[in-house]
Image (cartoon, rainbow, N blue to C red; front, side, top):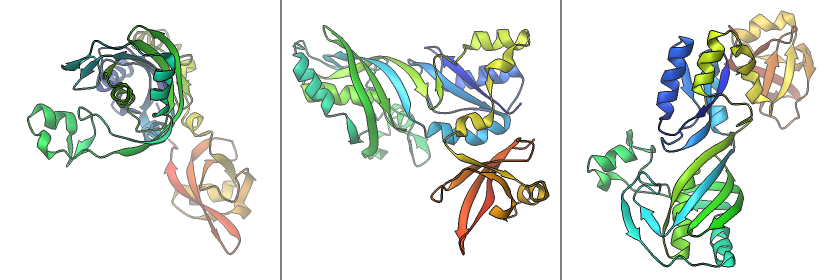
Length: 303
């Protein structure tokens, strides 16, 4: 099986727990997730199976959407509700304008400082593991550029603010909460997180682990499995001539005279490659020499 399934992760499970459950249910070893969701978080977690694991990094690079609750006045060391409370502030009476101004500091292209309790690695070790083993002094936190494309306040009730965020890869929503609390001067932490989308996957096309097992047992799982090229629709495509297919698969470079179809633009770097029967072969990398466009295999997905 070389497919992608969109699992709706429940709270209390790690992303690795989900991978293990999918391995067991589908009785296959080659399974990988596409971006860690913290145990306290729930929502969209696309899982790649078989050769689809080759595109996990492409899904990981897509924008993600979340609904989040920020609790003001309580700061934790992990920036979420699983951590130790390190500060409490009673005065959290802010106007909507003050809150909006604090949210403005997190919109657009920003330099974000990730939480020290995170899976980011330092010398091959996860930062959270280093902190828990008393080796926090080995960590030199640095900001990272991220893009907060949408940040909309959904409701304000007392010290709790519900908001929607759409952001680039590598964004920590926990850090958004921490930084807004810091901007307001009262502190804050992420008290709820639901991932609503990851690239083309969202809550509507996802299934639970229980449903995965149910559909597997009653032979209706196929309609919930996605082909590899489903996540590559942002790439244009080419169809190659039958007499070039074997040469291409074996690593050869073929030029556009052997393309039966082509939809790419001159500035495109990668394309989806299909054979004459419109079967997906893989991702090809384009090159240009002497006004001739050629393609060479970058990732193969043929069985």
